[in-house]
Picture 1 (cartoon, rainbow, N blue to C red):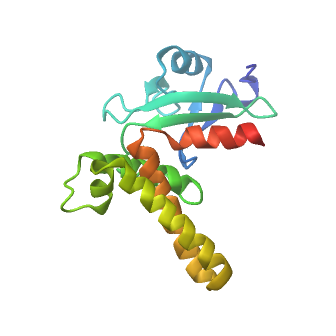
Picture 2 (cartoon, one colour):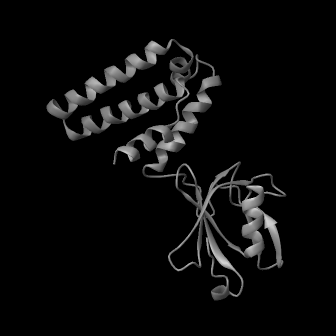
Length: 196
């Protein structure tokens, strides 16, 4: 990766995106040393323009950004950093420096996957998801089958609103089944991409 630091007087903007949800988390600046340290340590490091020094995100708060991937744009003067945050990214305590709305679009599925995963240890008396995850596997699998049939029937015999509702149930129960089998959504996405 050949980065053109000269255009920005030794700095390039670094857009940080959540590696799973694709939500934009923040914008920082990097010099060559920050890029090297990020690659070497696996923790996203920036150059502070106000303090004129390197800083690793989360070094005081503990809310680190673990590097997943770093790519350069077509002009070689802007970085796209994909990372997994270990807490809120913004100093104001929000998920993103651009607000606390969370991931939207298809990125919401990754957020939902994380939420479902957290239900593995929840009290089954207070969580339907925990009941499915801690119950027999065939029950979670059965729910996917039921929801698949209901989705198909809604497509041919119901309103579009009913189809959307049933498809949402199918997606949710499929994510629960994947979690019950310890299979990540990214494996399904990789399979789909491989078929494309």
